[in-house]
Image 1 (cartoon, helix red, strand yellow):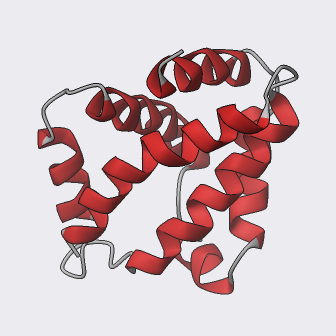
Image 2 (tube, rainbow, N blue to C red):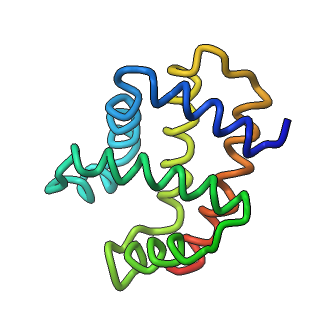
Length: 130
């Protein structure tokens, strides 16, 4: 099975799992005081919708979709925008994979490897915009 297919199937199971996005943000915000500060005034309901779409865009980029949405995200998160330092994406991905492992009851080691590989491509592009 292709890595992007593994991720899409796993992501579908995660989206169907109650609390997936809440648990992700609880874990992610707990990972760093810098991250907590960045989200202090954030509408978290809206943020969860953005996350849902953002993960999908990362997967679609790995499948060959234009990089325009990820470049726009990279620009908005650059030092001139939200000033999201590149190393914070590593914490984001770690928190996401831990949450996937918790919520996807069918996840296997190769699925988590696929997540890291597939999302890593888009994350590298976003980081390059910093």
